[in-house]
Image 1 (cartoon, rainbow, N blue to C red):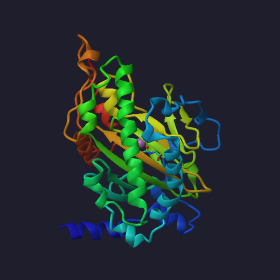
Image 2 (cartoon, protein in one colour):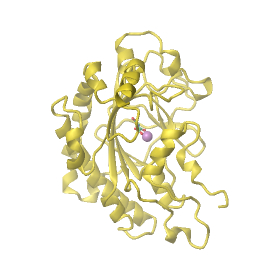
Image 3 (cartoon, helix red, strand yellow):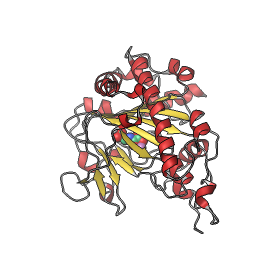
Image 4 (spheres, protein in one colour):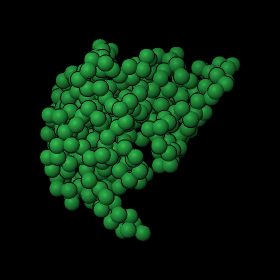
Length: 335
Ligand code: OGA
Ligand code: NI
């Protein structure tokens, strides 16, 4: 059965990188978005650039996270991740899977076997915490992949814990409110590659979505990420060398009972160069149901139903998450 699955996939799988390398002057029809969903590149509309809050994380006094590590990571991002995506197709295909429950998975678009419109992205995603449980399953080529990504995964894990403590405090909760869940939580590293695209005006690298977890810590090699502001305008996130982008995910929105909102974001692509990003997706434990903190709900009914990471995976396996965000299915209309 598994063999049949695999050969079916092999026949239909064509990555964005393969397309870019073939030098095609146009994107295949499956990448073409309806005009209303296109990114309006080049026009000033819908692509305002803003100043996001920039926080010097060294203020958190964590010796493990000195800026030299971040610089190393930045170099790492630019060089060896490219090497993975440049491997021969046959080698990458050993890791291909359309099953979102797989702990290590190479793919293209969001899910190449079910996407109605495709996105100009190749990716490798793998579980990263606890590191020793998963690292042997990671790509063994390029040879430094495990070491470099492993180092990055450990550093982002420490940073996530510190940020969650600060966020809990900022909500008026105990600093340790989510400590246990954070310690037993999961971390998925998504390494994304957006090859140069012949028609960036009519396609996207990733559609509008929010991340399901608690926080996403993102390292990017160049500009391309956009976030939606409260008036539903798309704002370009500037590229700042050596900086990490932190995005709130659905679990923090639910836990805070909607006081904080998860960030809706998308990725644009460009004609001239390949963009890489490392998205470290942190989440509370797989089976753990997350619900609004009782302290923040008070005497009202909670604004959201509870959910686990597992519920999210089931949802994206069975639904088109571009049509409806998972978190919208949890909102209670009575509040
Ligand atoms: C993601 C994501 C953004 C980027 O992987 O969920 O939103 O810039 N990535 O690659
Ligand atoms: Ni995302």
